[in-house]
Amino acid sequence: MSDFVYLSRERLQELEAELKELKTNGRKKMAERIAEARSHGDLSENAEYDAAKDEQGMLELKINKLETILSKVRIVDVDSLPKDEIRILSRFSVINHNNKKQYTYQIVSPEEANSQEGKIAATSPVGAALMGKRKGDIVNAKVPAGIIKFEIIDIF
Image (cartoon, rainbow, N blue to C red; front, side, top):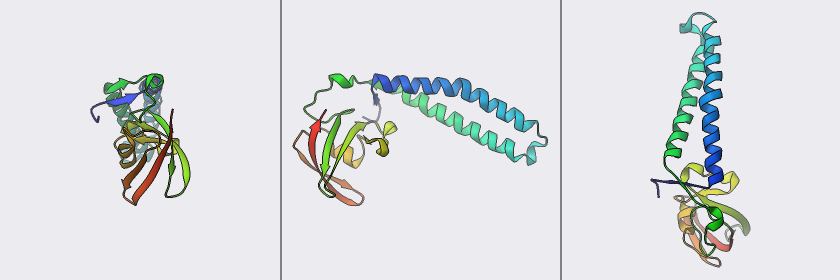
């Protein structure tokens, strides 16, 4: 699974738009910042120039990362996913029996994981434990802090 990045068509379009923005306006603004900093004199003692060059490096890293992700994309039609078991891009709700709280998650590629948005990587301990499971299953996920016991409430 690590050779591919599974995305919905909507998420692919978002990433493509972000990449286009970074390559056009992002690079243009960065070039302007560097030119402005360069105009302030001696580059060997110009902290503003050094900061702008560092930011340029970070911008190029982000562009490179997006290009790498987009080169590995496989589109998944979320609406056509079977709802009988948890798969990549499945959305589902579980009860965490350790803290008695209900959560809604989506299984995603590692590049898209974001715990604040309820997106967990298929390769993470929790994601791997839930993959292939069905509504009503009880799942024990081994995480660094111990074992988390989940009950799958619904897949949608």
